[in-house]
Amino acid sequence: MATAVLTSKGQVTIPKEVRERLGVDTGDRVEFVELQSGVYTLVAATRDVRELKGIVAKPAKPVSIEDMNRAITRAGGRR
View (cartoon, rainbow, N blue to C red):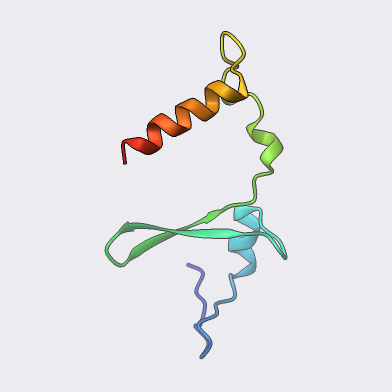
């Protein structure tokens, strides 16, 4: 089991074996996700935004800017 020590500034060095398994390197982001009270998991948050291309289907017909603005106005009025 990999362990680390918390510094007086609240910093932790992620052990090399953990960094390698997560695929993270200097400058990469990680997220701490709470699974339950007092239990967290460390998740690499290094995906490039270009990897998201195609995740949402294109609309059946194009939507105009005016239509988008009307939808935003309607949704804003419900709050």
